[in-house]
Structures are given as structure tokens and as C-alpha cells.
Image (cartoon, rainbow over all chains, first blue to last red):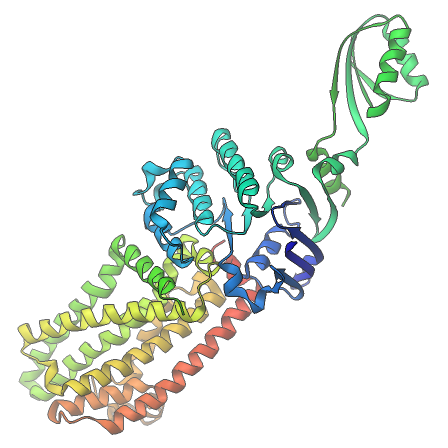
Length: 303
Length: 262
């Protein structure tokens, strides 16, 4: 079941088309990554999905209902966390969380706040003013705020930016747990491709306000056929070069005994056997498969 | 309308106030200081113009605090969140605009009642001016009318802030001061030049301040003034809501609201 369906969403600021006729849907329990270079339209899309920017065209349906016709009901079931969004700086973490819990009409919020602050390791900061927290601590409190109402859909805009690797990993584990235990649907933006690969079921690439690619992380990386093969060998360099030229491979010697070949993944075994048959001993190999980052760079640069 | 969400904003207001000396200064210290200054001016005026004129100044200053504090509470309350980049968090929660307004109206009324009582007590103790002498019913109706006008004015300022952002935040304090001379707070409206008198009669508080001055010598209920003020207040309040909704929608269409904090 689609819990979020977006159709023909468009937003112009003057002559600039920030979001240009995008359509996508998200299923219950799915984590959808929204990726793209700066200015691609991710933030404007999220602002429209939160109702703080009104689209020029298009429809947003949450749980099968038009968002702008059932806004209050919808907003009680979703939440938002961002590393770039703040809570009230003058009041304490506890006070901020109590206000948020009441805004979302959370019952028995004390226990929930205590549980979440313990998990995200900010229990000792409960009576510290939000203003006095480090950026990593603020981000963790923002995430806690976004979890207070047990949202069915969570919009997360670079939630792990400014977190140290340990807390970032804990946050990702928590997101995975939310998905597994409660089937929470998450729309996730990040510039860290490793975490996107780790948690996202599907990815949408935005560029200049348009969707330019949409697939699973695995299928997206398969779009790049080139794999990098690094070989260390013991034998005549000229023979290896001649053989690879005959095979019409692109290669480069980085040392006299080390060569880097850009090739298709499926012919790597043939190349290694071919070189071995020349009487050259391959002492070490390293294969670098294309990553989501390569896909990101390829798409961004091609637009 | 959810009581819990209204409670959330009231708590939010209380927490911000607890940590902000500026708020205490603006809604407690500064108004009391005004009462003291105008109280001494009253004593001074007793010598020249008699007790009545002195009382005009003091009653006007006392009642002005209702407008000033209530309007401040509505307009500046939102600015704390704009400055903290927290406004988005409030408006992506299920709170409705009506709940948001009602919360700040309640908060403004609580602050105004507290301050009005304190200022009234102070003027009684120091300057021997008893505000209750104008009649309890008069006082309640004056309070209600001035508060409604303050709500409307505060909502208009809020609309401007939502549309144009914190660069016009000074309006939250200053705008009411700009129109204050037109509302004949401490002097009768007929001393204003004729064209300004016409403008003054557009503002509901003008009638209330006139009524208040009359009630010093005649504490019977000043229905004629009160009803005129109330009718104008209802129009003002309705226009303020329409204006705010228009500005809020425009701000969201232009992407300004999301950038308020950015």
C-alpha cells in the first residue's frame, strides 16, 4: 500500500523551476532515498511534503487522502528530523521535548522521552539549554523530537550530518529497527552514499528539479558497467601491455609491477587467466566495483 | 480545537519567558516604570489642571498596558521561534492556526491581567488612584475591547512577519507606538486636529479611552462608546484574520515561510 503518493509536483520561484513535475510513491515500511546535488530540489520537495511551501501544481496524498484537505490529521502521523533545523534555543532539551510531545498529543510522554534520550545518549543534557548543545547533540535531540509521536512516515533531511561515526551508526540502526519492528516509512536525504546504500530500499535521483533516475541501490550501481581491476604481477610488463591492448582494454601502469584496468566485471576472470597464460605470475588482485557515489557523480555531471 | 496543543504553546511561552530576561523587562519592568513616570506626572498636573486631568493621564496609561502587553505577547511570541529557527517545528505539527492564535491570546490575557492588577495596585498605593472607581462592569468591558483590538493588531503584525520575515521584527514593538497618538490615550480626542480626529475614530480604543475618561466622573456603564468600540473591534478582528491568512498563504506560495529561519 502506498502511504505517500506524489503526482506532478511542481514549484517555481520566479522563472526558476525548483521542482519540475515529479511523481513518485512510497510503500508502507519502505525507506526511499531522495538524492541529488545541491539545488536539485530535495529541500523544496520536503518543504512541500510538510506543508510549509505550497506547490504550484501537483498532488500529495498521504494514506490515500489529499494532504491539503486532511492536513491536521496527516501531520499528526508524520514527523520531520533534520540536522539543519533547530528547536527553541532558549529553553532546555526537556522543555523542548515536553512542548513537542504536547503538540503531537503524546500520552505518557515522560517515559518515552526518558527511553529515547537514554538510547541517543543525551540523558545528561535534559536540563541543558538547547542553544548550548553541540551540533551533534542538537541533531540527536531533533531526531528524538521526530520520534515522539511514533510517526508512520518520517521525513529525514541529512539526519546524521554532524554526528560522530558511532552515534551516526546507532541512528541508522535505530532507523533500521523502526522499519523492521513498526514498518515506519522513511523519506531520507543524505550526501553520505554509504548510509544511503545501507538503509534505503529505493532511491530517487533529482537533478534540476526533475527525477533523473529511480531504482534500488543495487540496480543503480549496475548501471555503471566499468569495474576497476588492480593487479600486481611478476613478469614482463610489455607482454601484459600487449595482451591488454589486443583485448581492447583501457589500462594504466601505476608502477612497473602494478596495473589498473577499467573493464567490465564479467570479463575479469578471462583477463586474469589470459595474463597467467603469458607466463606472468599475478601476485595480488583488487577489484573495485562501482558504488552509489559513482552513480551520483555520473548522474550529476551528465546533467 | 485541542486543549493539549493549546497547552503546548502556553508551556512553550512560559518556558521561553522563564529563560528570557528581555520578556520580563518588556512586559513587567517597562510597564511598571511607565506607570511610575506617568503617576508622578499626574501629581505634577494636579497642581496646574486639577485632579481630573491628572486622572486622565493615569487611567490612559493603565489601560494602555492592556493593548501593549497583549499585542506584544502575540507578535513577539512568534519572533522567539523565528530567531531560534524553531517556527517550522511548530507549523509542521498538527497545530491549527486557530489553536496557535488562541494559545497566544490566552497567554496575552494572563499576562495583561497580572500586569494590570499589579499596575492598578501600584497606582492605588503610590498615587491614590483607584481604577475600580470607574465601575467594575466598565472596567471589564474596557479590558475586553482593548484586548480584542490588541489581538487583531498582533495578528496583523504576525501576518507581516510571516510574509516578510524577521527583517521587519521591529514592527512587533514599534508599530503599536506609531498609532498610539491617534488613539487619544491620555488626552481627549477633540484636541487632535480635525483630519486626525476622523482617523482616530477608525480605531476602537479611541472610544474606550474616551469612555474611560468619562467614567472617572460618571461610573455608569458607557454603553454608547463601548458598543461603537465593540462593533469596530469585530470588523478589525475579522479583517486581521483575513489579512493574516492571505499573508500566510502568500508566504507559503513564495517559499518565504520555509526561508523565515534559513
